[in-house]
Image: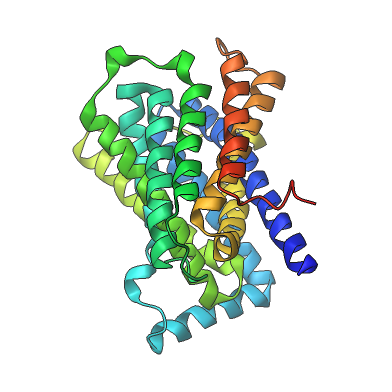
Length: 316
């Protein structure tokens, strides 16, 4: 019992660390997008760098190749359905929606709406057992925890909200993008149950996500008069986003099998807020500063975890 308690506590810590990684990834991808002046191309490059890393890992690590073999076997015997395979494409669609919606309603409203979509869907996919790790009932405590997490994100960005640019359609798209992320995490958990190797699951995700973004990018070039921007030099930080994504998908696909999507989301959001605070404190973006609203958001996130009755990290 004690060993299981410790194991779950470690997974919760990894979920929070995953959120910190996402904050670093966001800064790196944001800088790449700014240098290219082309957010879709930046997302494609980010995914591509991650895919290259994973292909190299698969070449030198036979366990990753064995995981892909397990995946093919599960598809052949019907244990895994073909419709579950494009989980990584949902990540590509999320990025595409993000690039279209953020210029309309801003990062702050997009963040709140997408987190709301993630938490709402997390309750549902946990209820139906989509992660492959068993069903988790929708309880009042879990609903309260999800609601408080959304409020935490809202509080952390309240000083950046601009209701003058509010668009109900754009907000609905942001909600949808968050919901897609929740479904993606659940499907990754199920896929990981069959590959039995988290980097194999990550490889599949990056193959599908990169392919999806390539199609979106080419369509943008062909029909929306988009452009191809030259690479902005070889600053290693600019291309860090894809490599972080490799680790993030590997972590999340394993963690959601044990904790569920909602609990992973709670800890991940908390980690993202902590990471954002540290980054803005150490390497602030022009015109941005750390505010008390962010501190309030961090406190609310912690409260949401406690109310949800999920945390083993703070129990003795």
